[in-house]
Length: 488
Image 1 (spheres, rainbow, N blue to C red):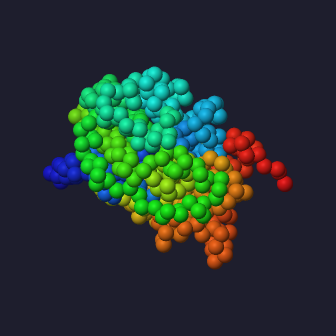
Image 2: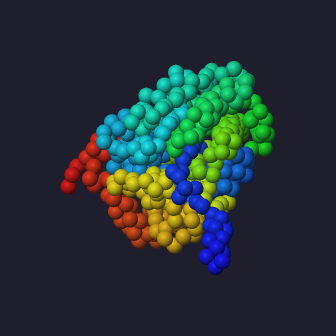
Image 3: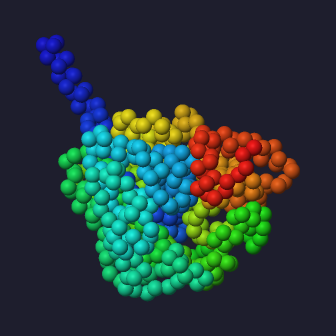
């Protein structure tokens, strides 16, 4: 009788202990990445842009609210994400070339999953693509075939779509102008809707095997194309442009002061600015809706409880901040990106955010860690798992985010400061007190009162860049950015 009772008690107890999906089987990964998206998400506190589906994802995961890219340009940032290496190590320092062209033996993020029995698939832009041309042509010239079992390109009309077309930046008539298209047709007549369609089809095809599915959404990259219903969500006349001091650029080093400056490059007036913002936000809301469709499909196919979902962007984006537009700057709006990670079995922190400093280079080791896979020893990021378990985890020790850019620009972002130098330190510096000047309007680098702060942060920056590969690859780096220096 006693033995029987013990057996019954053991069976009952077993039913009460929750079984982690990660322990039961290999967790899937759904990796979603937007293009040229800053933190204009309602769930990240943006007052105007509407992103209900990403807000819903954030309630099922953790928001990383102090996440920074490693290079604010598409090709270099995506190569860093997929290699788990800083750009100084993988030598992908712009949109030229390819990751594997620089590192023939690199084992990419998806390749690690592929090597461990996962199906690895790509839909649309994961590595660099020339937008809009490669979407119009349906190509992906910089893709990495070793990363995927299957790769699907999207072909869509982009700025040639039927609808009301406006150039909101009249001084710029190149391929990267702020052209907005209030497009006719439905979601699936345009690039991101097509990407969502194909992603949903792929989920159906691979639902019975472990998968790593990467889905690239190209909005809000210009051209700002979205169906009319998304433009209708925004009253153009009510949209608020960033408030910037008139002389904001006077104390910025000359090497970067005029680059993509509105007055000389774009010609966006206050009236045009509201139209530009409407087109950008409409594109974000359109992309958000496609994310929602893919998340719904994950639920409908019974995959949600065993799938890690990641959403991020490749870099931030200036929308008139500092009288500038687009990217390749080292202000907060250019380096900071949204990141949401939803791990179904780590529910305690769902709906919370962390302001701990983190970097996109941390994503590769995080996903390998969560899936229980051995990652390459060379990875330079740190697993974010402690913050997924506890958003205030004392185990998270990273104190700096390191981002580089054109013209030998290098920046570290600490809790209280941003320090930036140009020309690898030879062409000017910037120092911003983020506590008292979160807009980064007053450059303190030349102020004698802050000389010790500059010295301390520059020392930290040099140590960080050497750890990121600068010292080892200095000659190649300087050649790539066209800034060879005399060796002393």
